Length: 376
Ligand code: GDP
Image 1 (cartoon, rainbow, N blue to C red):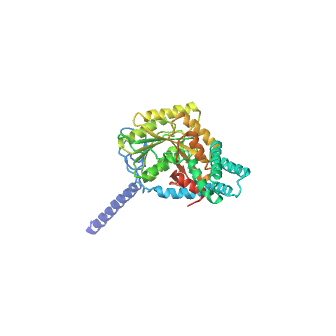
Image 2: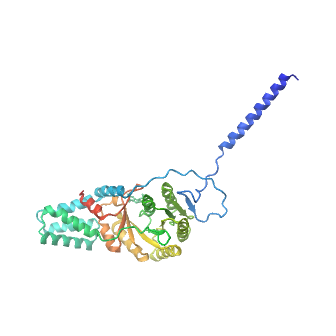
Image 3: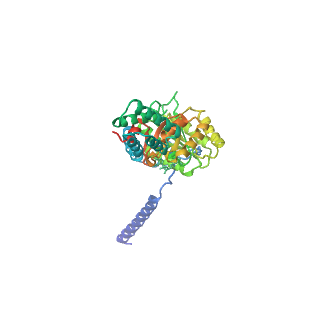
C-alpha cells in the first residue's frame, strides 16, 4: 500500500473519531440538571418542612436579583395620595356642612348621616357630633375655623394616644414572632408578604411561615413574596397541620438567629370553636420556642359591618394586638378605622392602600386625617 493511501485512510479515521466526539458532546450539553428546591441556605428559598434527611447535594438555582423595598417616607406619601383619593369625599363633605353659615338641626343630621355612611359607627358618630356641637356653640367658632376644629376632632376620634409600633424587636436572643390572622380574602397572605418587605426595608432579618396550608395558592404566593426580597419561607404540604408549619418556621428562625418570624395562619372561619382550636394550637406550639409578640388581625375595609363581626370573633379567640386594614384604597368608608379600634380596643397599625408590593403603610393618624381633609 502506498504511503498516500495510508495517509488518506488515517485522515478519514481521524475525521470520523472527531465527528463522533462532537456529536456526543452536543447531546450531553443539552441535558439540563433537574430543577430542585432552592437550597435552604440560599436567600429567598422555600424550605419545605419534611425534607428527606439525606437529600443529595442539590444544584443551586441562580439567586434572582433582589428587590429593595421602599422605606417608610415613600410609603407615607403614597398613603396620603391614595387616601385623599378614596376618602377625600368624606372630609370635604363634612367640611362643607360645617362651614355653612347656619348650623341648624338638619345640617347636624346630615353630618351624622355622612359619618355613619362612612362606617364610623353609631356611638362614635354621636360622640363626635356632640363634641362638634359643643365646640361650635361654646367657643363660638365661625365657619373659617371649622377646618381646624374638624381636624382636631377627627384626630381625637382616630386616637393619637394609641401605640402603633409593631413589636418586632428580638427578645432574649429569640426572634420576635408575629402571627397574622384573618379570614380568607381579607388580604392576609398579601399583607404577610408586604410586612416582610417593610421589615427588610428596615434591615431586619426575616423568616416567613406559610401556615395557611388549607389554601393551596397561599403557600406559592408567599414563596414568591419571599423570593423577591431574599426572605426564606417555611412551607408544608397542602392540607398539613398549620401548627407544625408554624413550629418549624420558628425553629428555623431561632436556628438562624433572625430578628422576626412572621406566620401566615389558616383563614377558614369554620366556627368559633374550630378557629379557637386551630389558632390556640398554633400559638401554643410556637410559644414552646419563642413568645408571640404580635397578633395582627387583617380586615378588609370594604366589608364594613361584616368586617366588624369577624373582628369580634377573632378578638374572642385570640389576643389581637393590632389591626391591618386592607383595601382602604378601594373604599370610601375610612370611618371603619375608628369603629374597629373602638370595638377591639387595639390600634390599627398598618393600612393597605393598593395591590402594589409596597402598598402597605404604617397607620399615621395625622396623615390619615389630613388626607381626609385634603390639607397639606
Ligand atoms: P387572603 O385569602 O386573605 O390571604 O387574601 P390575599 O392575600 O390572597 O388577597 C386577596 C386579594 O386582595 C388579592 O387580590 C390582593 O391583591 C388584594 N389586596 C390585598 N390587600 C389589598 C389592598 O390594600 N388594596 C387592594 N386594592 N387590594 C388588596
